[in-house]
Image 1 (cartoon, each protein chain N blue to C red):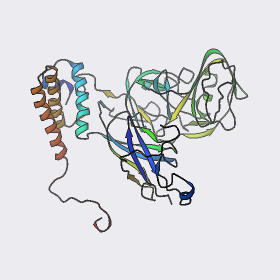
Image 2 (spheres, rainbow over the protein chains, first blue to last red):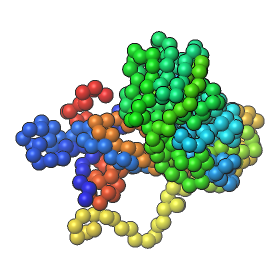
Image 3 (cartoon, rainbow over the protein chains, first blue to last red):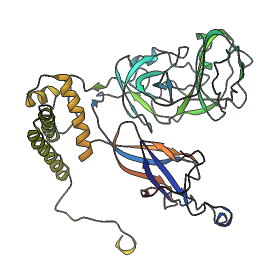
Image 4 (cartoon, chains in turn green, brown):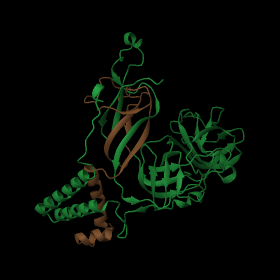
Length: 341
Length: 93
């Protein structure tokens, strides 16, 4: 049976803090100064937080959403940051061919895609570039700026060797920043088409900051989907590292990545950007929106009286719609404690 | 309603400006009355206090945690703490 827990949250800037009451063991009361007090979570919990929120939709999804080969919905396994831009990647096992740029073809450059199932990146993004696994990032790079540093090893000298003894040798001095920890997820691309299956998403790979040789060990694991084109979502799984073939004089791009189980991208969306687009609102709220636009136009003309009039009408209609969609006239039920429950 | 019809109703021919205002209006409507609601799940990591809000969020409706005040793996709403706890993490973040 699971243990009963006590959580609370508070907001801080663009983040929220989750705190937990430290009541894990009664024996801690004497020896643990934090016993019975709130502190950062005392244990990891997969899918431990559910965050319900409101978002604004300024796009329409395609009529038919299809998965599988040639479909417009693709499950992704992780994201990383390339040149400061958000980039989504798709992990694969050592036994299947990774994504080629042509496979990503449904995500055309300068078109929009919608991300879902992510804890952070849900919503509309514009595609900046797409490359295959031998390219500079091997994923779908977007125009979304990410103000976050990621660990990386970028070596474009073209003198690096990918050896059959599962080492990468000849890494240029200075290419390795602070290195990687075994707990990090690492997205590896580059090289040539000789050994595409070796590239992809890894964990369990330790890289010291000062080395010129990167050694894959028995602890190194690939993360990916069993099938290249998933028709039903399957959690990305860990697979034993399958070894790799020799590949000489290559470039290497290793970047810290962040796993997101259940994240997917939908292509061919219709973003709200021309006169023929439909606004995704009920007819009544669309009329309220007309008042809002009129208020903004009045404000631009410095007609503040007119602005306040139209804003009042806008709020009145939105609130009327809100109360109209709640059933009235019936009995209400409130959930309480004990006998009133 | 199409953008074209809305532009006719407000008497404007500036498409770019109208689309910018429509996007503002959609957000404003969502601040007052929820039209699009989503739920995301986030892993709790031991010792990690801060978590990012979703990028497209306009307003939070609820934060629930697994096993909060229950032993049945149920997700229950958690309260908002008025004060920050006295105990900070070692990294202070």
